[in-house]
Length: 130
Image (cartoon, rainbow, N blue to C red; front, side, top):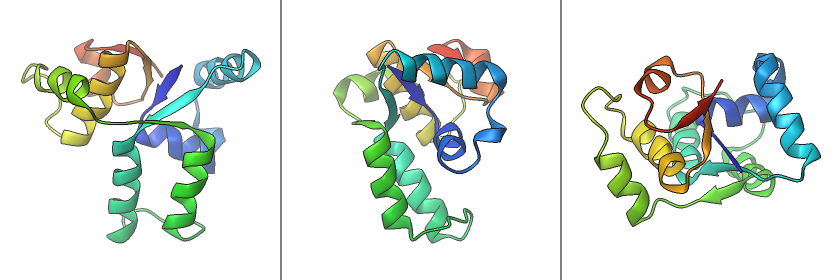
């Protein structure tokens, strides 16, 4: 299973041309192998939050978009293991709670996080692919 950060989930759904060649190849390999793609429940919150504040333009109502995400991805909850892992990250990790919880989800479940966030990539708190 691969965990996509919020940007990658949006790109898969709305702008696949923004995905790197490496990411496209990995996503295709996952699809060919029947491997699930996942997002953190924090991704749903980030999208709803940005949409409500007109920081993200969706081409359908937000509720419909979230329903489509729920159909396309496994949704992983923020549970005790995730929050403990996220809380253990050093101060070098980005302070954004969403970033911490998404990376904490990857680390707690030993998943590869697909992200382009160089600040997250630099920390090495979880396996990453961009």
